[in-house]
Image (tube, rainbow, N blue to C red; front, side):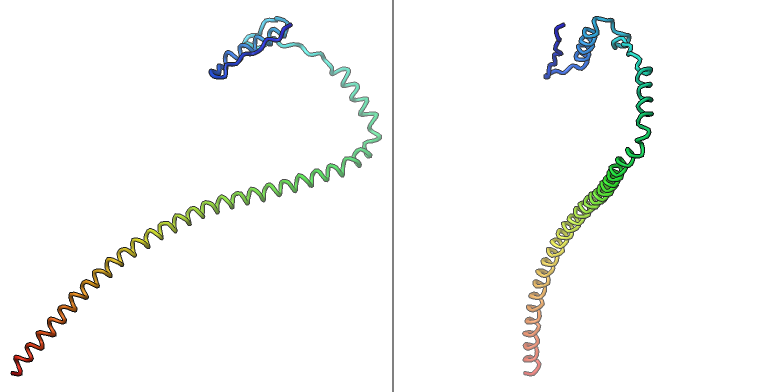
Length: 165
């Protein structure tokens, strides 16, 4: 019987067509038996091994029963070591999970801290700009007051000369 290849157009994948090809191939391998309803191959009855295998298993268990303490003695250290290893790995995984959670929390905190610093710097620039404008305004007012003071000083001298003449 020749093996039919399932053709797949990778540019235009059509799952229904692929499934139909698979069903046809399964039907061909089943010897042309008709497919059951729902597109599945008719169930093949499996041989019943429970009688022979079950009996053989019981016989083997009876034969090995005198050796059970020895088997447990040999397997117990391996089991204990396995349990210890699993516990250590579980503990390590939990610690890793906690550390990952802390790192994520730290990342969020770092982002928030960076945002806070950015806003702080922005506010400092705004306040410094306001203060610079205020300093310039105060310098201008000081110059005006100095001129007024000089004018008042000259006026006072002129009035004193007129009063003491």
